[in-house]
Amino acid sequence: MSRDRDTTGDTTGTADLSATELLAGYRSGEISPVQATRDALERIEEHDGAVNAFCLVDADSALAAAKDSEARWQAGEPIGPLDGVPTSIKDMLLTIGWPTRRGSTTTPSEGPFEVDGPPVARVREAGAVLLGKNTTPELAWKGVTDSPLTGVTTNPWDPSRTAGGSSGGSASAVGLGMGPLSLGTDAGGSVRIPAAFTGTVAHKPTYGRIAHYPGSAFGTLANVGPMTRTVADAALLFDVVARPDTRDPWVLDVPRESAVDRLAGGAQGLRIAFSPTLGFVDVDPEVAALVAAAVEVFSSLGATVQSADPGFADPVEPFHTLWFAAAAKSLEPIDARARERMDPALVEIAEQGTSVTALDYLGAMAVRNELGTLMSAFHDEYDLLLTPTLPITAFEGGREVPEGWPDPRWTSWTPFTYPFNMTQQPATSVPCGFTSAGLPVGLQVVGPRHADATVLAAAHAYQQATDHHLRRPPLLG
Image 1: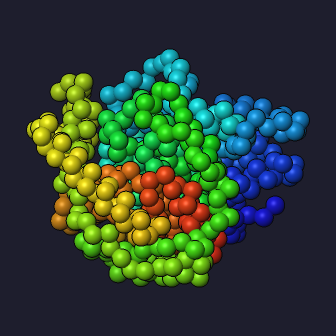
Image 2 (image 1 turned 180 degrees about the vertical axis):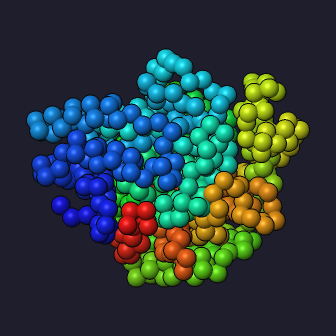
């Protein structure tokens, strides 16, 4: 069984294999789900102390599920497309038998916990082995991962630096082989930001494509998305969770095409726009150079690539209106004494959100509508848009912004991500190289609404043509 990355040094058995490779090994009998689960748990035991990717690990439950999966594979009767694959869940999603603390001391730790959120239910039905829950900032409110409940989550490439957020625990987990699959959430970049910082893959779907329950306070900005090391695995997980659920009133029907089946189509014949700055972003020179080099690969893949900006101004102020109002709603039931135990910056933006009027909110929504209309017209001309995922690389852990940064809010360094939450478009972050300091850089592939499979296929074609995903974090030797 071949591996999808260099396995010199610390290998921990099967931990460096992708989900796709594990499943092939299960079919052939070369690998067992029990072996894969033990190796993932061993990787957690060896390295999670350095990055704090998990807030809950349930080894007994995982091994029991792996033994059941092994018996099914031996009988030739797997129950679904993820049968036996070690998987983790961001601690914003409901899980039967486990608390969902959301990074906050204000949420209950006592059960019963009798409900799976829709995407968790889908992966459990597909046979995935659930390892545990991944860390999140409090209520998933910011683009880095630290909270009063679980502390600071850091980066496999340099544990002194942030993993990004808010799905930083998921990104660090998959990046270190602590299970090849994880489910994260993204309302302003929260799967793509940590993917870029950790050299992993994440896909924010078209809004409504993956059911979500209970509904997020961040409303129609919020999505659930797959987090993996390879785009092929992201497509596999996307196909499993992109299913309707009656608990989500905004959920879309089943996609018209399988993302996995579409991967073979690659980028051939696509019309692609490259916007290195969106017309308003200052980008670190090393990041800019790596992204520009990545864009050149798409021409060799049969795509037509042109430089083109979509033509919108930074929508950060209307985004803040929506975001701060959502934070205020999230904290509405929490009394003043409990708020003293919360992230002070979250309390600060929630207090600002209480002053947002209905007219302010509707004005922000009007800007959002205009942005969506503009991008729909843009995609009449271009099938995809390529940008950097982020304009900078990972900075010191435990901070919302880099030291000396002129703006105190995380949105000041994520201008490539939140616009596409506002427009509800699908976007994938795929690793596109490393700086001279050895830090990962991400390329963002954006498509029109409902074009998730096309976005993933193009990102997969790029990843297959490069080898950035084969490089191992220093923690693994």
